Each structure stands twice: as structure tokens, then as C-alpha cells.
Amino acid sequence: MEIKAIIFDFYGVICSEIAPFWFGRYFSEEKAKQLKEAYFKPVDRGEVLELELFGKLASLVNSQPEKVEKEFKSFIKINDSAVELIKKLKPNYKIGVCTNSPSNFFRSILKQNNLTDLFDEIVVSSDHKVSKPDPKIFRIILDKLQSKEEEALFIDDNPQNISVAKNLGTESVLFINTDQLKNDLTKLGIM
Image (cartoon, rainbow, N blue to C red; front, side, top):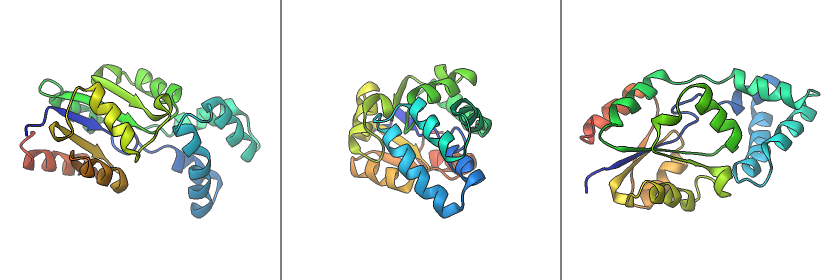
């Protein structure tokens, strides 16, 4: 079946990962990984508000919530080549983004970087109380894009998320870098 919709992950594809850099500033690699998992999973699922998250993180490092949020934002780096690629794809495909994130924080990144109009549909895990790799979130973005599983392409930097999308019958590409993505899209006849 022909691909009609392309769904992008955000962090690690369009924008740099943020949390690992922040945690890495204060903690060992192993401790940082544990803390990221413990603190972000509930926020991604909308069980904990982001204001509460930044408060908890601030108490971990003896800081203020506003300062922690500002530090997080200092790690934002937009992948300009991925943005340009999306702009090239947009005239021919519905473009969606599906991300695990606190909603206000994510939407502020989109707004500050003029990325909101890049997407036809946006699904943020905390808004829907479900996060990747749960198949429910994939179905939510597919429904919003009015796309069948086999009519969509999913792009993510997490192999577990790719596996779930493939199990649903959605063509998927593991993102490593934009050049590799362009090559994979060419092989699929999308570019």
C-alpha cells in the first residue's frame, strides 16, 4: 500500500535529547539513567505535572524549579537538516509528530523554534495519558492523521518504538542521522 502519512518522533530526531544531558551534568551515567526513568515516565504519561517534575528535580540538585527548566531548555538543539527534510516531504504527505513529553514544555519548544506549522497533527504523550512504546499512542496519531497502519511510515531513534510500530503493520525507519534517513526514504521510494 502507498505511504500517505509520515510520523516523526521529536527528541532524538528533530530535536536533541534533553534529559540525558541535564542528568549527566549532575549524576553518573548509571544514576542519570535511573533518575530519568523514575522521574520522566510518570510525566510522559501525564500522571505528574511538569511543574511538579521541575520542583522534584530542583530538590535533587538543591536548585529552583525555574532554574532547572531554564537549564533543560539550554540543551535544546534543533536538527535543522531534519526540519528541511520534513519541509520537502510536507507537500506530498501528511506529517505527524508523536512524542513522549510534558505537553507545555514540548509545545513551548515548537513555538520558540517556529515548528508548529510543520506538522498536520501533534500527539504528546502527557495529553493522552499514554506513552511510547504503548501501541495505543501509535493508534492515536494514526487516527488523527486519518491513516491506516499500512499507509504510514514511522521514524524514531528508539528501537523499541520501531518494533511496536512494525508489529502494528506500520513501515518504520530507525533514525540514526538525517543522511541515513534520506537514504532509507529513497530506498522506500518516498524521496
